[in-house]
Image (cartoon, rainbow, N blue to C red; front, side):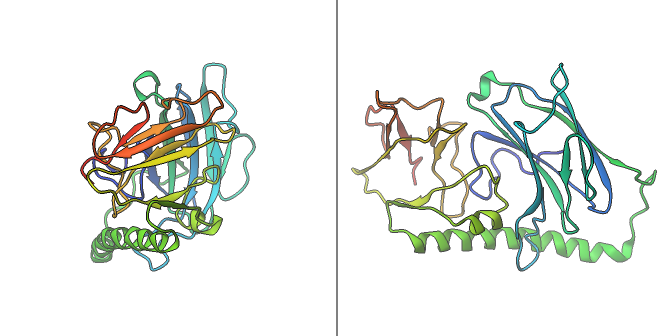
Length: 269
């Protein structure tokens, strides 16, 4: 498993509370994923057919497994078999078009939580792997270029699409089909919106969260990238927010700190 992008290379309105790792796979083979749970708040595994180099790019996924379904040993370790055929125990279903396994780790307080220790191995793979075939290199290089182009175009189109469905400074709930096409976790629902603020204006957001394991509010730019959460308070989650007595909360999005406990900075946007 490897981290597909460094912390400051962003895509797909990535969640600042998430740590993502993934592995490219061949769905004709079986894989064993071993790890130790750690103390992170939420953990999920998704078999995806993500392909930004293709016209459709993402059409959903196959299997999905989260920590509430994961059988753990007393020491917190686990083993998952990812395969097309059903397997007893922890099983992640692969489809004929599955291209990667994505692992999402969600933190409430990143500095206090321990991430998952994880490794993946291909079962029955030939040793050593076959030599590189020069005839395949041009197509693979073209695929890399098309991935970069397709990724940028797909998320730009996505932003244009949801901006057309909701007025400025308002929210839109994407359909389940839209969420599936994004390759999203089926346990997560997104409300999306855009904002436009003059230097002396603020956007006030009020909500009463449902009973849920986790929620967050975050800002992103027009290229569907999260903002720089290392140095700016551009997001807040269910553990960090200050609530009213009735369980509701108020957030204030503004260019400068208005002295509000739940201030979200626009970080110059």
